[in-house]
Image (cartoon, rainbow, N blue to C red):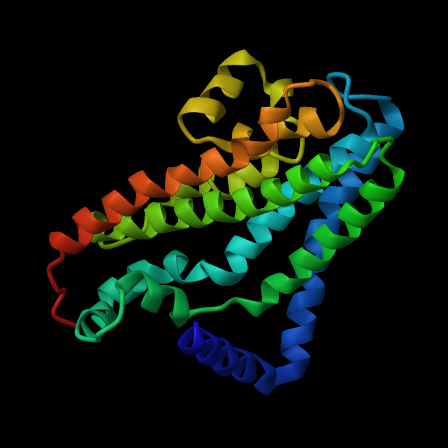
Length: 258
């Protein structure tokens, strides 16, 4: 942890070398997320609810998924550029160092410009916590924390899987964005609105529903199944198959010679 904090400090100092550009990018990230929020607001100006979910409930749903995604973008974005590490031979140096490969890739990049996205998520979360008609018991507050943490782990696992594919293809596959950025896009609404087949896929294949829809229904009082609050923890197990693919890739890695 001490070494990671040192990397964190180095990346922060590097980002702050060009303060104008840094803060301008953060503002642009904030505004990008804000346009999605405006889209939700305009839609609810015409419709009172979506599949029975009110405006405040959808804002809460989007704030939680956006915060989990933003945290993974901040801390796990090293895997998004991992294909370049393969191509330029940088991974060769990583393998020669006495530290875990995943730790080193994570330490290569901390994307502070994603703070703009996180600020937007915090604003929406505070708004929804205040306006959403929920009896905020300790278990419901804990469920929201689990949802955010589970989202962070799940999206980070997907970034790990995305990076792992580069072992076999050299270049990253754009199709993986369907499961990351695409999940953020359709995850701004409760997953039940997309139909039973999509909900099943997001429950048993890529477990977005475990960190979004099911615990959300418990938070909103739509179910009394208190064990739904622990589903985000179960969703974190998705990191295991992603780690296995990573280990297979490392074992079969051959240098590009760069």
